[in-house]
Length: 130
Image 1 (cartoon, rainbow, N blue to C red):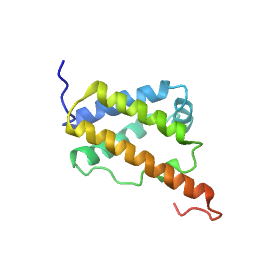
Image 2 (cartoon, rainbow, N blue to C red):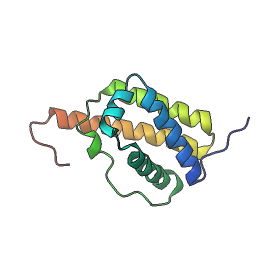
Image 3 (tube, helix red, strand yellow):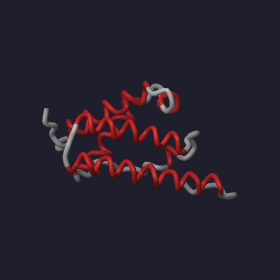
């Protein structure tokens, strides 16, 4: 079966819904997400639709700052690695093409940036400006 690339908001929603369905069931990162988002999954998914729609489709619907909600979570490198494994597998299972590759590239860049920011916050004696 030839897979299509990510082209529409419906494609983004399929990617996001499939990915976060897998996250919720994951033994390592599922408990972190499920605790933080208990009762708020629909709002989170809507936010993720617009985030990825903005990044991948150049349709500017996302307004916000993605890092601050993650700053206080008990997450380490192993959690980012698992997030990326699930994300890349989801994209590869559903899509193929330059936009799908861009999604995976952006996921890796965000994970790396978030880890650098978290390390900085955790090592600084000063309260972060979030």
